[in-house]
Structures are given as C-alpha cells and as structure tokens.
Image (tube, rainbow, N blue to C red):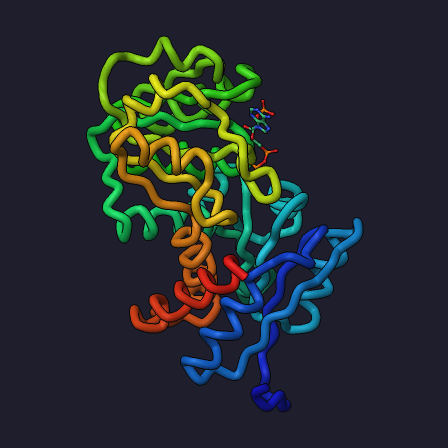
Length: 288
Ligand code: ATR
C-alpha cells in the first residue's frame, strides 16, 4: 500500500449500500499509476446526507462520488450543478470548489466516451432505449445531445417513459422522442436500430432473463449496448448476437465514469494506457 502522509488527499463514495462498489479499485489504481497522493474510500451514509456532504467539505475532501439512493437529493447541498447533470436530474460526482461542492454527472460523461470507444454512433440515427429508470435519464439525454434523429423509450411503466420523453423533447427540439410500453415493442417501425438496454433485468444473479425475449425484436437490432457489466455477457447481449447484431456490455461505461470523475477532481487527463490496463483489471475482477 502506498504511504499515507500529511499531504494525502481523500476522495470517496457516498451511498447506501456501498459494499459492492468497484470505485475504490478504479480510483486507487489510477492514483497509484499517476503518482498522485490520493486515496479513495467508501462512505456508508445511513440517512443524514446533508451532514455527510457538508462534513466532507469541512474535512477538506477533494471529491466524492454519489450513488443510490442519493443522486437526486444531493443536489440540494451543492453550490452549483453542471448544466447536463441538472437536466439529467442526477449528480454522481462532487468536485470541490472554493465555497462548496459542484455536482456533475460522470455516468453521462463516461457513457459518451464509452460509446465513442465502442464505435456506437447515434448521430442522425433512430435509437431504442429499454427502460426509463435512473440510468435511462443519462442515456436519453446523451442521445439528444449527440443528435439522434428519433429516440423510442420503452418501459414497463409507460408514465416514466412519457415523463422522460417530454422532458428531453424540451431540451432537444431536433430529436423526436416517443414513449412506448415495453410490451408494445412489436409496434416499432420495420428497420434497424441502435438499442441501449438500461433496465436491471438480467443483472447478476438473475442472469437468465432479458427484458424482451422475442427473437423478432432482436432482428431489428444493428448495434446494442447493455449497461449491465455483470455478468459479462447478459441474456440480452446473447439474443442480440444470435441475430447478428453487434453488442457490448457496460464495463467501458463503468471505467470511464470513474476516469471522468478522477479527471474532474485532479484536473488531469488520464493516460489511454492506464485506462486500458484498468479495463482489463475490472474485467478480471467482475469475472472472479
Ligand atoms: P436504475 O437506477 O438502475 O435505472 P430504477 O430507477 O429502479 O434503477 O429503474 C429500473 C428500470 O428497470 C426501470 O425502467 C424498470 O421499469 P419500471 O419503471 O416499469 O419499474 C425496469 N425494470 C426493472 N425490473 C423490470 C422487469 N421485471 N420488467 C421490466 N422492466 C423492469
């Protein structure tokens, strides 16, 4: 373990639960590789979020990640919220500024970088988003930001999909947003889509499930991303591959949401080689 001394800076993750997080591995690895005197630890916050945020600031904490269930509520305790994070309605990264923490959404920033790396290009394309929960907020916003032509949001609970569609239609007048019930996937136009799977269906340990099972849907999938990274190949991914579509999991997004947070805290650019080595380590960790 690296030496901790009087100059060591502290970063951490606020959430409940935090025991399964891979963020300490990500940040401590980057800090070690870049020679930064920084450590990253999980902070289990039972309920008093305000005291946790203000206490972290008072303790000269450099930056924090925020996870479930606090990504929305935390915005009340910040001096500033980045435009994209505000529009997405969720903050997962707090950056120390002169008078308090500023909030960002590194899930969004990380997904943008991951899609670039995985060659998923949504500009001018028709995209299907499966799910309308917390994670979908950043994904739908990103599709608008990247200039998708049309975004179909499919969700079991139609109201959540409608809310997301209306909200983003106001931000991105050049993109058409449509809300549909998940079971109505058969009503999608007869064409090829880019599909982003954001529901929790298929997540370990319920690996034998996909939110849509019907092969006819998968015939329309040209390229897909499942934001789940455990298991490495979800049932959704298997179904896409079986019909000839290209597909990747959420590991690259996990990597880059961490990298983007690290870069914001330390005002650096993390070297590409470090990112690729870390990706390999994460893959091994998730598979173990
Ligand atoms: P997250 O922050 O991971 O997105 P969430 O906000 O609870 O978590 O959202 C989970 C998403 O998975 C939602 O889109 C949810 O659909 P509902 O809005 O209808 O609840 C979807 N989901 C979870 N379990 C599902 C299931 N068994 N079938 C279909 N969709 C499911």
